[in-house]
Image (tube, rainbow, N blue to C red):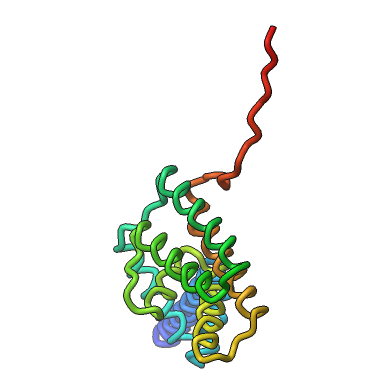
Length: 193
């Protein structure tokens, strides 16, 4: 075989190997992003209409959140928020409008306490999606219902569903603290001897 043919075969083999490596790395990145972001991955791909743009956006989110100082709640903070949540849920029976507003506010307070910036709603959703991808859709849905309600287009059943969505996110945000729900324990009865 002549020297030029050998170099051509080597060059083709190198290009083919590079293409295979590129393909495998892209597949691995896609799989990792799908695993990390769950349903949020599909949402961002659908919203952007371009897998490359969506994946770049998700990677940028992860880098941004990695620079933040997100931390779990302390046991005392989690207990305080858990008690506040129980009050908000109880309030729903008598005043669903106010309960929805309070639920949104309480979720924002938990996020802030954990270290998430709480400015723009869309930025909050993106930040939450990095560590809580399975419940970020709940946050969007609850917020959409609250917005519809402010325009007089949500029923009491819609508000109930919003509370369910807020509760799912709230519980996920508190989960790292490993605090049991605050409940009244019966006082043991002691008998005299």
